[in-house]
Image (tube, rainbow, N blue to C red):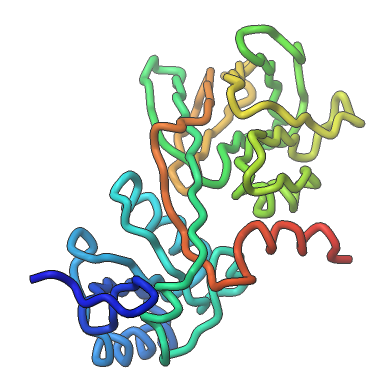
Length: 267
């Protein structure tokens, strides 16, 4: 059976397959129940679109599951920030999805080696972060494309953010906001002690960034890719993986590009 198409070329309400994902909060669960009654519900791998009811954390988790499936995610905010979300409304959901503006984002691929020689891999849509794991400051060497650019950064940590993630933890650490379609990455220190005035760097998205930990027994460091963490790392390599894609949908006039621009004029 061919899907019904309206005069604008969009799939109509009767044929749009939606999967609903809820954060588990009382309000989000109630909204999900009402929406399922109204629009039906499908498994993630059978859906034309996944509607995420929660905050940015749940959206990131869902996007990881949808990576490379071509299934877009449309968020409605039940969290605190909701940078990746749209406003909640029960009505006209299919129409909103059909006319929504797609934003495609590529993850960072992280490879981390720990003190025992184990190798761990993970993807990050927002950022890869390194954090000190004890009262001792971390000491980290930074290499870009195999060339050492900083012999030793003494700090609480450091992160490498995508344009999509540049307004998240990167911004809180006083890193730069990157336009969503820019071929750039933000390298931002977290509470740098030496050199104290170094504020980070903006790198091309083709750069391969390697972090080497110094004095690892005395100064343990953990590596985090979005919400996946590995302890006691000695070397971490990060690069953008453009072979992998996740897709977000935003209401017209409220896309990620517009939100990134607005964020730069907040005071």
